Length: 139
Image 1 (cartoon, rainbow, N blue to C red):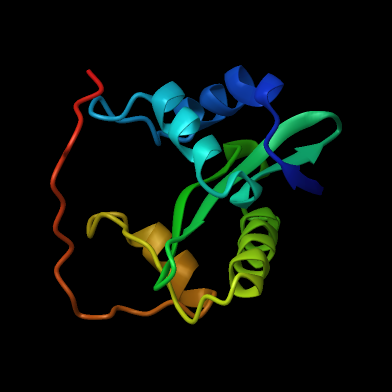
Image 2 (tube, rainbow, N blue to C red):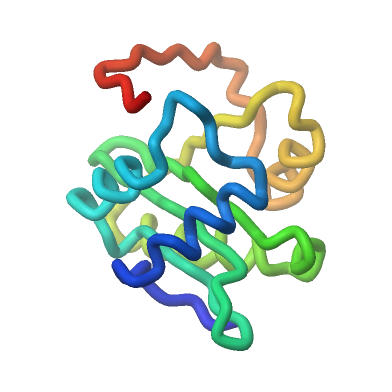
């Protein structure tokens, strides 16, 4: 798999992958999420290409204090081959190069399989409560 920065012509294929992976939620318009990401650290939005197809994505962020991971996706038929790990290694290196000391991410507590994936990569439960407040409603 080759990993590169997202390009605008990837939009429809990325959204299709996110849909296939069950990452789309009614409160988040994926087009708006991508537009927002392209305004801030677009170099941290990566796609994985295999046989000229987008098979993986990850969206990283760094706001000067902590790094963040969003939209890690691997095409279901390509899962369990180390592609998610490769995507994470790539985005982690880019975030670290920006001076980031720690990366955070949020996972629904019911998603045990994904929690186990991140635990295998060295992520642990920080024993915090994640809170959020919508400032803009996409739907």
